[in-house]
Length: 118
Image (cartoon, rainbow, N blue to C red; front, side, top):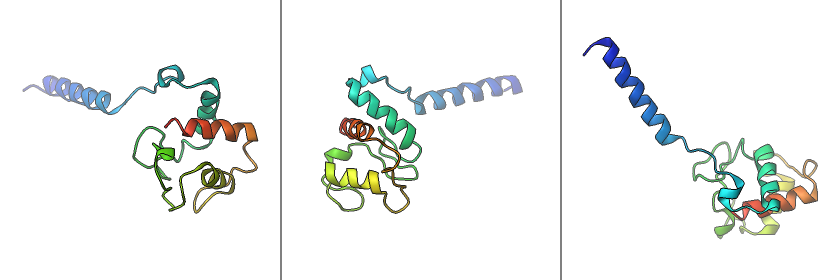
């Protein structure tokens, strides 16, 4: 095998691995989000996505939020309901900062609506 052939095979294999691992982000329309849920997705992208995955079960710096409202309990052991999730978002928990002084009530409501779609 020539060095050029080896490089071509290596590039093709790398391209195959990258395309199979990388998924294109779905649009709000593809996810069937309402305008309010789309606003919540933007809040999530701006404030939560750096630490939490939305559509994957893998965690980042914080736990995945995939199927958050479909679970009985949060990773902390607290019930997975509006009250506890709102409390965690506003007051923070462990390494998670508080967003009570960052998010408006409208942003919080939109975020909760979006999280329920995960």
